[in-house]
Image 1 (cartoon, helix red, strand yellow):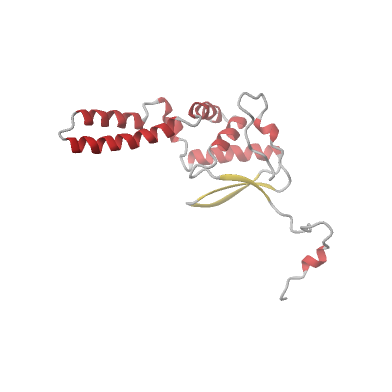
Image 2 (tube, one colour):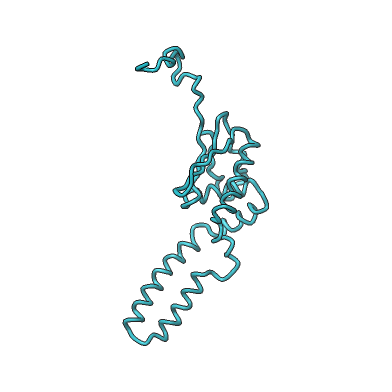
Length: 180
């Protein structure tokens, strides 16, 4: 792997990008199920920083993946929906309807717990800095969300086909293509 993108330990003064030492041929690969893969040259520190910024803004503008973080200051849609369900349960005309509404409320509570947990405050702080083009915040936010549905990415290395895959294997043996 060309770059270790694991964020520094929480509370560490170590900077994320100082752990990232790009190699020649390093490429950031972004892919999701609804688009073709995107390859970004990140073979130098400058290209790495530019590539991370590009990916952040691409995800922000083209895929609008940060709406959960954009809405953090407003009343959560799930909170509002849960309040409406609680009200409907209390005014329910029948026990059957109330039970059905309680099931819906329980499902929303599970969704709400997932949405508000898993480092949400940390992500909100990073997101605020990322929108200011702070490359360290961008790198950490991208790392934390890299397994989200439209935010998959990794750093891979391009192979130089002029270099033998194993030491001691002469290139002349690689030049002959079987069957030709």
